[in-house]
Amino acid sequence: AQSVSQHNHHVILSEAASLELGCNYSYGGTVNLFWYVQYPGQHLQLLLKYFSGDPLVKGIKGFEAEFIKSKFSFNLRKPSVQWSDTAEYFCAGGDKIIFGKGTRLHILP
Amino acid sequence: DAGITQSPRHKVTETGTPVTLRCHQTENHRYMYWYRQDPGHGLRLIHYSYGVKDTDKGEVSDGYSVSRSKTEDFLLTLESATSSQTSVYFCAISGAGLDRGVTEAFFGQGTRLTVV
Image 1 (cartoon, chains in turn orange, blue):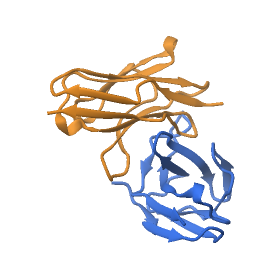
Image 2: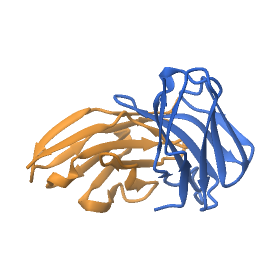
Image 3: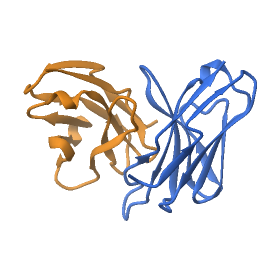
Image 4: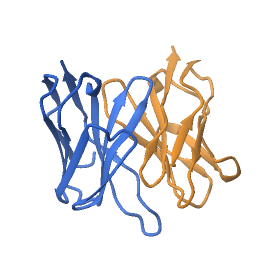
């Protein structure tokens, strides 16, 4: 069965700190991987996506992710976070677009 | 934002009553999905559709049914609502890639359903 797992459920960082959120997937076949962000009270917005090609993917708002096939991972990174990055982040993938349980990110001003 | 409209946006209903949520798209995308979002569980797939009259179950399909008679509409029905179905429901759409299964999903604004 397809599955996506996120390692960190709640992360607290100070502004300007670096961020890395873990995501692992478990499914075969075509690779479709995504990171979404959800701000309080809003719907999900796509941050970035990976299908093939360069394993380092750049998205919106300064986020990037690296696909490592040997580790079945697709971790999200940002070199320097801002208070406005406070949100919930979801990794997703597969042909049914299965989601991980999410990571709540809280940035201290 | 992609053209996805969910209705109603909020609903309170009584246990045991049937409830239908509607998702309407104007993007002519092939795939449509219904998810529920609950604290600590992320988004869980209820049902999805890969074409008109083609649907399949997701992770948490018990107690839910769907129908897709037109490309643009995907209906989610709770046959007999229970308190455990109190949740926020999101509809999503995605297209078909050239050499891959699906493209990224775009989400509606969500429907907050409360079963009392």
